[in-house]
Structures are given as structure tokens and as C-alpha cells.
Image (cartoon, rainbow, N blue to C red; front, side, top):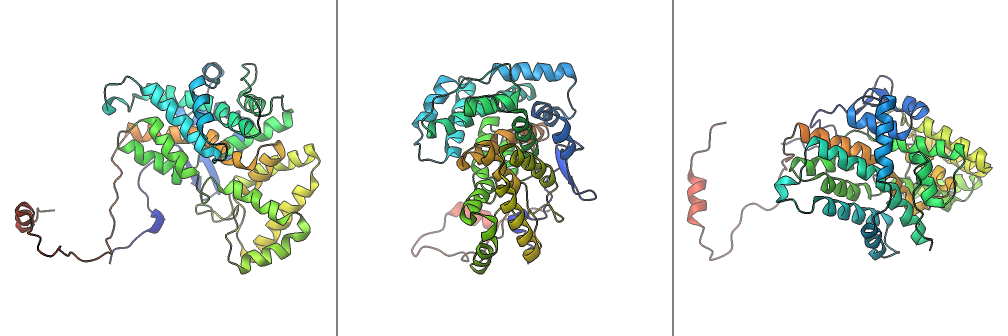
Length: 393
């Protein structure tokens, strides 16, 4: 009997030097660095450089990356026009997927064949930086157009996180808000062979192009069991309303066997190592916006759920209310995840391309035994092949 690993649980399919969870310290490591240390000390641009190159940048290298990123921040007219064709009632992940697909089609136009689209390591790094640079404009414009607001042009005097908030809200954010947002982007940047990253690597393994791999990853991230979970956390908060309602709400939810999003993680057995850093950022936002009721609801639900189920929060639990306090619409949360995770995706895409093997797993068939259409004469070539001796293993 074949041992089926549903969901590939526990299956090790390849090596990676991009990230790992250290079971001894329960820390998520980016290229060896604990993510909480990176979030406390680095800008998102520096962490992007680390994921792509394997080392933190020198001052000169960081300045060069920042200069290149700022050159590509503006939303191209044709990409804006494509986003405008997406129904306003569609999920914003559909806007992001459409925009990235168009950017890829435009960038790869004129290549002789699909064999030329994969790109060199240098070309793929350039493509990665351009996507990293323009995604904030895509996400920001998506939120603004759903609110009936105009596009806000980027500013080249602001760092990545501050400019992202500027393009979204049309005003400069306070330092405490920029810092919390920067930390969230670092925490979401990478997480080994998660569903969307593995999707990107599978697509890359066919020698397809970087943009196709990212579009596939966006599709995987849209699901509520992956990136969409941060949206679900806010829906839960909205349902509960206040800390006073937690016990009654949770009684009903557990009785109806609802899945409580924002808790549990397949990789972490002792709690998500990213949560304390994001919870600290949330606490600063609660104080900044004077919203103690948010912290009260957060703490009450966490305490009650952990006591009853012994399952701890994951990163989506603190990030949802944090993004809400900053002013992002709930539907924008998963596109924010894309803007962060594109750094990890592209690092994995380049790693896969550098040491490629087509990812093609097997399956165990459990359907009908072989059967035939009445009166159909078997193909002679098929019969001949079936009668040949099996090749030696």
C-alpha cells in the first residue's frame, strides 16, 4: 500500500538556502538571520536585498537598490488602464494578478519563443526589483479606486514603506505607523516552501518565465487557507464586536465546528515565531490611534481560544487588526501580502532556475479498473507496447 502524503505534509522535495524554521529556537531565519532581528533593525529594502543576494547589503549596495527601486515606482499607464477594466466589485487580488500578467507580457514582448522567456540570472534579478518597486502602486491604486479616489503619484524622497503609505492615503504617515508597516512587510516577506512559493517553483521548473511564476503564486495566495487568512481575521473581529462578546461567539463557533482563522500553523508547533514582533507593532498602533478596545478584543479571543484548544495565533492574527488601524481596507490585506512576499517568491524562483529539475510528482490511482468501449478494436501499437518486456530498473 502506497504511503500517501496528503498535502505533501512532511515531504522534503528540495534544498533551499533562502529560509528555514529553526526548531531549536522556534525562529524563522532569512538566510540565517532571525526574522525578529531583521524586523527590529532593517528596512524592507535591505531585507529584499538579503533574500536575493544571500547577504545584507553594504551602504553602497543598499543605495544602489533604493535608486533602482525608486526609478520603477510609478504605475505605467497601460497597467492602470488594465486595472480599471477589472470590475470594482472583483477581489483586489484579481487586479494584482492582472497587473503582474500585463507587466510580464509587456516586458517579454518581442522574444523569439517561450524558450527565451526564462531569462538569465541577471535579467531575473532586474525583473524582481521592478516588480518589488511597482507592486505598492498597484495595491495602493486598487484601494483608492474602490473608494472613488484618484491615483497618487510616488515620491522619490521617501523610503519604500513610507512611500507605500503615501500612495495609498495621499498623506505622509507618522513614523510609528511607517515602522509598524515596515516590520509587517519584513515578517511576510518569506516562509520557505509554503503553498504559493511552491507553486512558483513548480512553474519555474518547467522553464517558464518569472512573471508566470509570480502570477501563479498570486493565485495560490488568494486562498483563505493561505494569504486570505488575514482578511478572515478582520471579519471575525467584526463579527465579535467587542471583548465582552468573545465567550458567547466562541461557544457558537466551536459548536458549529467553524475554522477559526488566525490560529495554528502547519510548521510551528510552539507558536508562530513572528507573532511577538507583529503583536508589539500592533501595540504601538493601538497606543498611537488610542484604540484600547482593539487590544482588549485581541487579547480576549487569544486567551479564550488558547485555553480551550491549545492552539496559538499565527502572523495573520496580529497583522489583520494592525492593517485595519493603519487604514487599509480588509480586502487590501492579501494584496499587501503579495507586495511583501514577492521578494521571497522571486528569491525562490531564481534559486529554482539555478539548479533546476522539473517538479513532477506521482499519484496513486484509485479510480475504475481498465475497461473498454463495446465494439472498440484495440490499437495495434498499444497492444504491441503492452506485450514488450518491461525495461530493467
